[in-house]
Length: 230
Image (cartoon, rainbow, N blue to C red; front, top):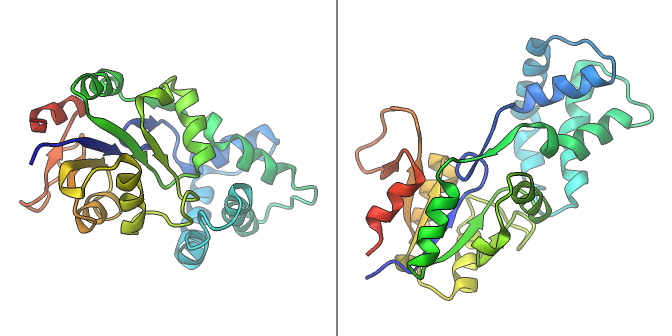
């Protein structure tokens, strides 16, 4: 059966970021005149993820965007012992996160999308970010939304990856079958295996030479997808 559509993860696939979560936190705290070692911030982020990560992640898409991010950031500030009575630090981190994390578009993203559209394929994004964030990221990296026939965020149907429902929703919007579609993401569990469970043909986007199970379809650049299009 010929391929009729391609779905993409966003961050780590179509888009890269130069600063990780602790580095973004460190930058905002410096702006606020707080000198905290990056190692301390890394430990605080790890502690919150370990102790509260599942609970907080379970709220993603179900509560408003800023409320969700505030859950993460408020708990990290508490671990760091940072007092934020007027919540100015919290607002700065939550509001400016996307703008300061150093987002860049993959070099071959536009070329790949242009080729897919020229071949008559439907395209979409299935992201763990909120829809508003997906749109903001595309704006920052200057990738026209017109490239995509559907954008799915964690709040679109109040579910997020790896739930198969988010993939099925995207396919329903595109009016194509799972076996007629490809999905490209950079996370083995949340992207590859999740898409596979939804019946989609998955590809893992991974630039490194990491050793993977032999059944994993891996690509190092996005344009390689064209080799799998009939």
